Image (tube, rainbow, N blue to C red; front, side, top):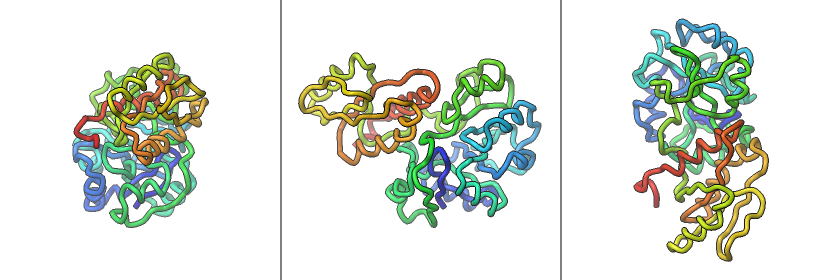
Length: 305
């Protein structure tokens, strides 16, 4: 079944039921080597799913759970290889979305859930997105309205060594470092596989090209000159040549993150060939937005229409 979280909609199954978990991979077309995040009702369930939980995990959970933070920990012996992709680690998260919380408390167990979309494509932030992507392959969709944050959870590896940021997301690196009292290493410092770390991911059917504010117009003109239908995604009103359209994105990073995937879906709905997107700063939610757009831009040509 699909259910809302504050980040994106998840495609959930009983994390203890291997047949149900296998259906997640089949419905998404997701490689079996890619681990899943287990969603819990509270941090009190840590010990069921993880072993040797470090004190820093309780510090981060106490500050950011429920919320858009996934912690990578050493898995307990009872956790299936299907969940972890064969690794000795497991990703755990306690979402803050009220409907997700009601579901988890009523179910009284862990729910394994990646985003409720086809593998590698744009994540869903509404029940309508899930229906459009997966149709009747999903038994039930809980409609909780649009997601509040709009990009996936931040993933922090606590399984060995100092905390490592594997994926930027709804909790900023700056906020995490404020609690940790130290800077985090980047994903390059960890060998752990985690969701959303592939070079090409989160991709619409249109090709994504990133550009800074000063080169938006020239890059868009170059793409149009190659015979493509082009749209520019940028805040404000950049000076664009006639025939190049713009989808205006919000000025604030929080609002931009909230509508990012909806905007990428609009690009496909309007059947543009190319979207030229203004890059975002490497701080706060800008880091998560740039991460998603960079991975979307890296999508393989054989994934394009």
